[in-house]
Structure formats: structure tokens, C-alpha cells
Length: 143
Image 1 (cartoon, rainbow, N blue to C red):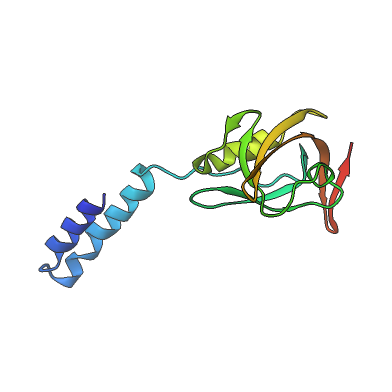
Image 2: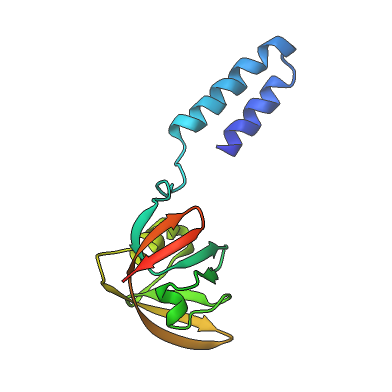
């Protein structure tokens, strides 16, 4: 796509100014319609079964930002800075962040097995999902 845009730009450089805009607009429209889209996570629900964890994704890792006080992840000792390596034995991919979030949420009172890396030490924990409700004052968990 960038080659096409570069050729289009070079070809338009000698064209009168009023003739340059339309092809660039068409290229932008084509990119919106025809280019592969990034994975989009559905809007954040106010109620779900989860483990009470906030994550961030980088090019190399999915890292714990924090555990929500009183939540299941907090109770099993997950800490800020832990790197998420696997969920239920499956290695996590940073390119599939939406799938990671979906895997951490689940059925009522079900468990999820996590493999974490903390300061070069591999840690395995089992976390039971809890009903989570977002309120104006934070999160509330119900077992």
C-alpha cells in the first residue's frame, strides 16, 4: 500500500494542485474499506466474571498494571509488573490481546490457570473468577 501511495504522490507532484486532492482522498477511502483492520475489543461491560486485573500490552509482553484490591488476582498474589506468559497452558500473543481478555473472563465461578514471569522467576497460579461489577466508586466483587 505504501508503494502505491508513494507512486501516487510522485505522479501527482507535477500535476496542478487542484488535481492532487481527489486521488489522495480515494486512496484514503480505499484504505478504510480494503485494508485489514486491527482487532477491536468490545466496549467494556459493567458486569462480568473475571479475575480483577488490569493489563497493558507492548510489542513483546502483556504486563500486569495492577490488581484490583479485593479481587481474585489480588488474593492469589499477582503483582504489578508480572508478565503474563500463558493462560490455561496456552502461550499468550501480544497480537491477540482481545483473546487474552476473553480468556481471563469466563463462566461463573470457573478457574483459570496463569503462568507469570516475575523477576525471571516463573510462577503458576490458579485464580477463581468472581462476579465483577464496575461502580462509580470502583469495582465490587462477589464470589
